[in-house]
Length: 466
Image: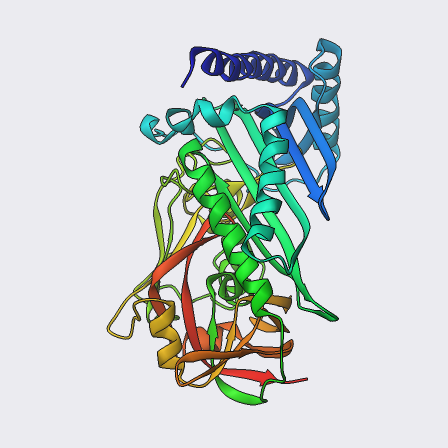
């Protein structure tokens, strides 16, 4: 990385650490028994091209600090984006006042410090080509993305192409000795489009990507432009599908949207403790044969990669489901205190609220003899039936029930895509289907920047044609 880029991000981190230390002292003076400060500061540049015209171009720079205090198990929280001494003093006073009015909860505890692997910090992956990008290049990239999509086929109309760059630093300290900081920079791009052929208009399709490496930008831009153009043109000439209950092929994005929400919601220890998890009491049981689910925040290619969580604890590789067997639930410090265990380093959130709970960088892998090589092999295994690339609908994280619309759907015959089909309704229960006949591909695709997901062939899905 360049010296100037390194210096600017490091300067933000140094100032954050200074302000966090000041706020900690003010919290103690205001009467806090324990205190935690989480701070984030950085710069965000973004540009949108809408229907061929440059739309919103935005540059934001700012810093926020969130203060969590505890007094005899009573929790108080306040935040600010003002760094003036009087603003910090007001935050400390407010947080303590809120704590004194809150009900006590013995699970309100701050974590003790734990060793964080330095080589996992994102500052070691900070690319100066990403961190030093300016607004002119952000605008150019957004325009290029839209033009590249259209370049694949003149029938494609780009509704919106977006490109953004975020560079920032995060700091967390608490009164028990936790003290962590890091710097990061990433680029996000997305495009939404449809195809128009004469009087026919096909369905929308969407693609997006997140990268930390400047060397990956062009390849990812070309990939999502090609994929969205191919999908949009493929949506033309749609015919009616067939109503049936049986196997359905899911592209990675569609599988993530319909199946992984319930799965991820139910591995939260808080959901288990509050009676909202279908997987309670299932540790050690086989719940999803044929798959392994890992949270791997050590992989810098993933948007959720990090060295520590929202509470400053190590964010480590965690096997959640291993060869179909549920191994663990995810914990932050609160749920760990309730459950009489330790945090798994999965506190989530920012400076505007108290820590939540969730995965950082999820990877789903096929295991076992039924694993298929890739998308083509999966369609051959399907034989005849529906293949969906996107899913839009309702998913009940507690029960696992899902229902919604298959988008960019294709009808497959003899293992090959035969035609595009109009939107059809899908329904099923994610937990029952994952524990039934579900086959995954060894090939995976990055979804949403923070998940690596395979193609899936799921038997027992209800398909209702319009």
